[in-house]
Every structure is written in C-alpha cells, then in structure tokens.
Image 1 (cartoon, one colour):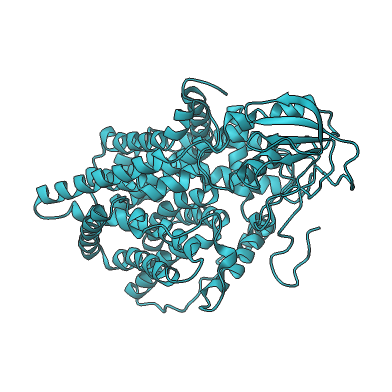
Image 2 (image 1 turned 90 degrees about the vertical axis):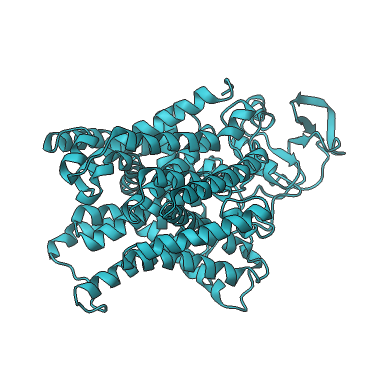
Length: 616
C-alpha cells in the first residue's frame, strides 16, 4: 500500500466512504428530514448514510444474510430508494431546501462547512501521510481488535466463533458494536482494501462528519451565522482531544462523537415539530451512538428529556404521561426489529449495568483505567496546550457560553446547559478518584466539544463585533497549537516492519506453530492479527487486559524474535528468515513440555456479570 504519502490510497477510501454513505443516505434524508432542517439538507446526506449503512447491514446480517449479499442489497436498495425519493420530490438539495423553507441559502453557505470538513479530515491524517502509506496510526490499543472484528464480520455472523480468523469472534465486551464494524467492513469492501488500510481514513471521515454536526447545531439551535458556525466547527474539529480520539484511534468512541450533535439537533426538532420521519432519524442516530458507545447514552438523552419536558409544560400537559402505541399494527414490524437487534441491545444493557457500579464512591476503578495511565489536563479538552492559553481561553469560552445560553430559548438553554453541567460534574466526581482517568476522559470528550461550540457561538454575538472576532481568532490560534502538538506526537501503530510478518505466514506451512518472543505490548497483539494463519503462543503473552491473547507455551516449531532481544537458547541453527525488525528461527526438538500453540485465542473476559454463562 506504499504511495506518495498514502494520499492516493486515502483518497480511494474517502471516495468509498462518500459513495457508500451518499447512496444509503440520500433517500432517508430527502424523505424523512424535518422541514425546518431542509435548508441544510446537503450536509445531512453523508451522516445519515453512515448511520443507515450501520443499521441496515446489522438488520440483514443478524437475519443471517451473508455480508456481501447484505451489502449488495443495501446498495441496490439505496439506489432504488434514491430514485423514488428524487421522483417524488425532484431538485437539487439547495434549490429544494430554499424553496421549501422560504429562506435564501447560497452554495457558499454550504460549501464553507464542507470545505472545513475536508480540511479537518485531512489534518487528522497528517500522521499517516507522514509515514508514507495507509495504515493504523496512534497508540489506542483497541485498534487491533477493531481491524480484526471488521475483517471477521465480512465472513461470519456476529454470533459465530471461527478459530481460523485473526479475531475469532466478536469480543464479548463489544456485543453491542457489530453495526459500526459492519459499516467499517462495508467501506473496506467498497474500497477493495484490507480493513487495516481503511481505519485511519474512515475515522478521519467520522471526525469530519461530527464537525459538520456541530456546525448544524450552532446554526439550528443557537441561531449562529454561517461564519460563526464555521468558527465553532473549526474549534471543535481541531480540538486536541477530538483529534486524539479519532487518530489513536478510539474507534467506537469516534462513532459516538459523530452521532452526538445530529442526535441533539433532531431531538429538539422532533419535540417541537413532531414528524415521524424526524423521529425515525433521531432514533437511528441515537441507536448507533448507544450501540457504538453505551456510556455516552446519557448525554443526548439529557437534552432530549429537557426539550420534551419544556414542550409538555408549554402545552400544559402532564410530565409523567408516557407515550402509547397509537396503532397495534405497528407491532408487526416493531417486534421483529427488536428481535433482530436483541443481541446488540443485550450488549448495551450489559455495558450500562456493569458501568453504573462505578458511581458508588467506594467502588474500585482499578479495572477501568483502560489503556490510559493518567488524567489529561482539563484545558486539553477545550483545545489548549499551554496553561496560560488555557486560563485565558477558558475565561473567553465561559463568557461565550453564558452569552449564547442567555440568548437561546429556554428549552435549548437548559438542554444544552444540562449537557455541559453533566460533563463538568462528571469530571469533578472522577478527578479525585484513583484510576478515575478513564471516565474523566470519556465524560469530557463528549461534553467539552458541545461547550466549545456553544461558547464560540456566544462570542460571535458580542455587541462589539471586533471583540468577538479577536476572541475567536485567539481561540483558533490556541487550538491550532494544541492540534499541532497532538499531531506531532502521533505516529504509525502498524509500521512496515510489522506488516512484513505476512512473509512469515507465506514461508511456513499452515500447521507450523510459532512462539512469539517479543514484548507483551501492542507489537504482540498485532503479530497475533497478522500471523493468524499459524498456531501461535508466547511465554509472556499480553495479560491483565480484556483482550484475547495467544496461549502460554514454551515449545513450538519455530520462534519469532524481536531484534531487540537475544537469540533464545532453545532456537537452533541460523536464522530462517530475517526481516526489518524480526528474525525467525527453528526451535530445537528437545525443548521440554507440550506444544500449546493454537490459532484459537485465549479469552480473558468470558462472562460479563456474576452468574453469567461462560462463553467457552
């Protein structure tokens, strides 16, 4: 996959994303987007397509439709539905939206956020371009499982186990997440590339779509002008921690981040201007957010509940009355739909039930540190690297936040303010707790971008325009410095030296076992993915994590050694294969003990709750 900085191959993946998401997203956007949002219809097509691809593929694959056939059905159905939608309501998105909404919308108004989205996505790929080829970047240790899961789902049902695969089943703690990995696999299939070569560009595309969502949020809910919304979009899209989430990559969280602003905007419109289409889109964005990252579920629900409560109060209706099923015939499709999504829904409930224990003050968070080793400074989440910039920037953002919320309608004021308050309280609660950095990071990674966007919209409303312009330019400059620092410290996670291990698979017979003599870190995890065609083992596998690992064994047919280590005593003869970083030796026949190497990974998490059924 070598190329000129990887640009050509990244462009190929980006085109695959646009093609797939546009085909799937055009019809539901045109048919279901609420009338009040149609002036920006063009900006909704790709996000709706990403959500639609994930959910439609999940419904088909869980119904035991093979992946490639399911993808063909989704593409054909999207084309057919798009033709129907066009014939029912013809016209380009801009002309149609302006005609229906009765407002003047120019192509420039829409092209600016689209250009910024492309720019944000390209900036997020700078570490990959610097390496010169398409690969996995960052140091997020879930990446090997993300790539392996997408590859697994291209050929297997989410409930299956297949020891011959690199990741031989959907990880137990990810049972809610197959929809996003099916969409990941679909992008890889359309691009005609391996998942490892796709993930960085897809994550960058999700960051770009999420930034579009915050542009829409400031425009639709806060009434910001197009350029003020563009400033908010830039501050959110180039935020150091936003880039950190997408580049390293925290892939599940990146999907949740993308869906969040769209879910909030749709929640308000569904509550204030009821429409079945809007409700369907809101449920879709909320569903993918919850499937991708169940811990983020409270954030859009806070806004939705507050919007709903204010609307009920405005109408003089009771707050406690629950919605009822209007037509029992709807059960004909609701019950089968619920049945098909039962497994990912079970995964959501399991994740939520387990994670709610952390709210108890005396509960130990030692198992919830993830791959983080400490707290991030709070200023990072606002986009600032230096403490001096952080203090000045925080004062400006708080002032802008107050101005924007005071000018907003009461329901929006309390809905968005409730999310910001949730983020602040969660950060304050977990900051003093030992090993609390995981939840501190997650809470602020979702809530802080909203606070930044609202603050930017507020600064643009200052009566003295030059003051607002200077303030926003200062924030953009400080954010750019933080983004540059994060980009500068991000490198390849899957370098050429690791990809060379494919030669070992080609060199050895399929039943030849290999002991991995390399550090128990990301290198060993990736070696397990690339060498999945061989029975593998290690004397020191990756333990004390939730990741599957290779079995423990001293004896094997061959031993693969990291060149930082010495030739092992139980290896015999000269090197059989010398790679850039690794050396393959034959192992002596007199090594004691049984050969426990296997193509089947050893699970460390076999059940999610006490009394739960062991998966093995």
